[in-house]
Length: 125
Image (cartoon, rainbow, N blue to C red; front, side):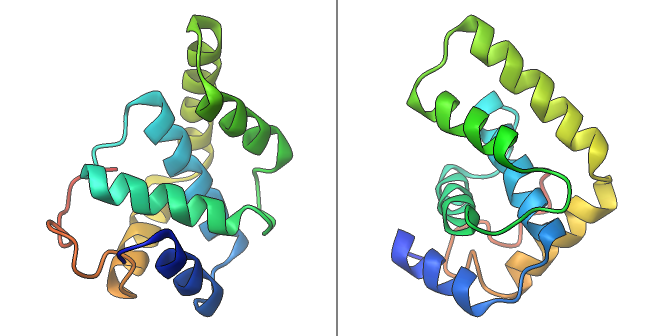
């Protein structure tokens, strides 16, 4: 995926579950918390995917997480950084590791990172 529009088109054409939306939200929290180990380009693509999925309901996460993410993207002070950290840890414990791994494998297999360096990386996000 080369652009935000490519990612939005991919998201529109790909059947994603409410659990997938939760996974994208969790990855966004990890990115904001500085704990995501994806390559920088993949982080941008995941942020675009998160943006493309904003209108879709999650299974476990919703408006509270989206409001926090929006606030953090606008700028973080230490108190907000701590809140993002706590919400990220909660999200990661709410979603099992196999669920997150399955999500990452699915988006890679369906071409979300097509053409990206390291697209077959097994690194944890």
